[in-house]
Length: 147
Image (cartoon, rainbow, N blue to C red):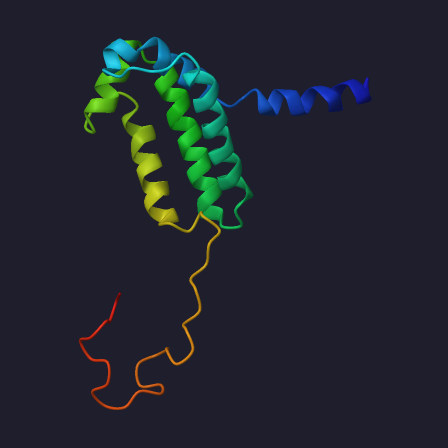
């Protein structure tokens, strides 16, 4: 019995992602959403969304996992909407539909602030660095800075 439970648990966890269903809903609601989607949209969309979720969850920063969780909750809320309400939600940032979930997602997105791509800042090039290091007075002022 113990072996059976360990084989079932990973399936249950994986099947909890709402993104495949949300992608199918978008396909079914494309008229109301005002979009035209290809026949393979739902499969491609689900693969992209699940991949993005996996990347967020693999990131070391807690803010990235918080963002993944908030996005999952928001997607699950959108699944409860009919096509007309989903279209209202997507077109009106002040829509009452999924308002709390949208707010939580926006807060998580702001907290993550671009830290979830696993790309650090490049080290300064040789000769560059903090102001005053290796530069004479007046050199480089106003020319090429920030480019």
